[in-house]
Image 1 (cartoon, rainbow, N blue to C red):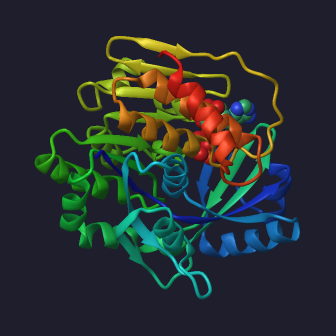
Image 2 (cartoon, helix red, strand yellow):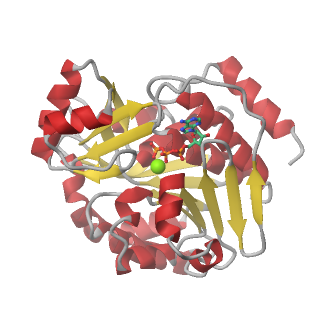
Length: 341
Ligand SMILES: Nc1ncnc2c1ncn2[C@@H]1O[C@H](COP(=O)(O)OP(=O)(O)OP(=O)(O)O)[C@@H](O)[C@H]1O
Ligand SMILES: [Mg+2]
């Protein structure tokens, strides 16, 4: 059976429907709209209090956790084996992320627990998209964990067919994860590395990030990240820094373009009007669904894109993380899986 792993952050998301400029002003935080900006734990605490007064909802989040959750929602027939790697914080008496992952059937032997609360992510949601302010929380110890568990993580990741990596704020993390992947690839040269770096890794760039890109087979970017990473380069120039046979998956609100060495394939479905309620985690939803489909048939890339896009769009229409009734899941999955891509 195909084994899909996820390595990345588990956060506590406080999501408020607010005007981003007003909230940033009130908090006296200097951050750009629509992207993710690191903030201190103290600022996160002040921000959490403000957002809670403004009626923010409280969800379990983090990019890798969100994507993992979507793969699990789809994996009703246990089509693929799921594993998670990361540090789970403690909130009150519970380790809610770890408990949720266990409940969804993940192998969590690669999850370390911490007595510190999970990282707080303040998500300010508007029609145009979400602005994220993220603090370290339990992820402060991430570099230490990646170094200490280097060998164990490399061995466990090598047992996966595909591993999805998402960002941590620690600037040391890209190089440390790259080193683990280099080692895992020695044991498993066929390993597929899927990377959703987010602005948190793209904006600072650097050697560690380049080393991580060099291990990447599938690179996921939203439209702001695509523009920022490409700058004056072309997708082919970015691809030259990835693994041979690379794919670049560029998400937009209206569709997706899949770039490879040989082609650029647009996916531009006919769209019905919709109300955007909460775009937080939409990209993660795309990645989780894309990978669940991809792991079952690596040759049907358009199918993976179509499923990712359909579920991301479905998620944007609802507040909070993706929720799927059995009927909706069956409707969406059946329609896409049956179509000839
Ligand atoms: N405002 C929007 N209108 C319509 N569809 C949207 C909108 N925002 C997101 N989507 C859908 O979600 C998908 C992913 O969105 P996007 O790439 O912007 O996410 P993201 O910013 O990376 O999210 P996150 O990092 O919070 O998971 C899009 O391809 C689209 O299907
Ligand atoms: Mg994203």
